[in-house]
Length: 178
Image 1 (tube, rainbow, N blue to C red):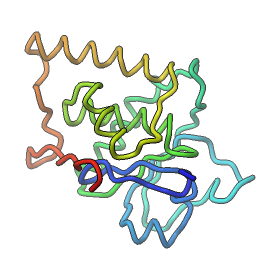
Image 2: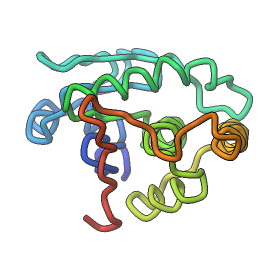
Image 3: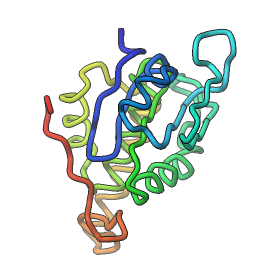
Image 4: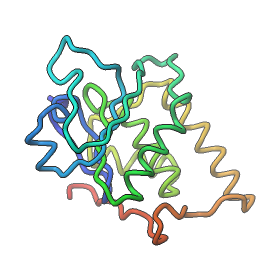
């Protein structure tokens, strides 16, 4: 079951499901300093409203439906991830199972913060967490961003690799299986 698992994507970013995010011992053992939760608080299931002391949270009320405008949250989610990375923190991006909503945001991170084209970002994420599968609507949003980013890089209006951290280092991507 994917709800209780997480996968490290790069030096600072992890993806997973709600059961892992709700487990205090697991969150502490993994060293998570930030959690981005991509569904509304819901007290009807385990961990639905849980907050761990010392962990910075962002909760985005997002539905996993192709017609849901997740892109309206892209900027705030990306800023939250960037803040965690700049602070040297460990961030868990999660939805219910770590399959669609969270993978969309992690792919956005890989595309914008590390400069990977969508195809490469998806291959890297899929190798690390085989269950990832943004729904068709979310995938279309990422494809539109990918086309725009490629055009900006070709026109010289965007760097080939962004400067994410204060020191100028881009997070090292984790090779599959590590």
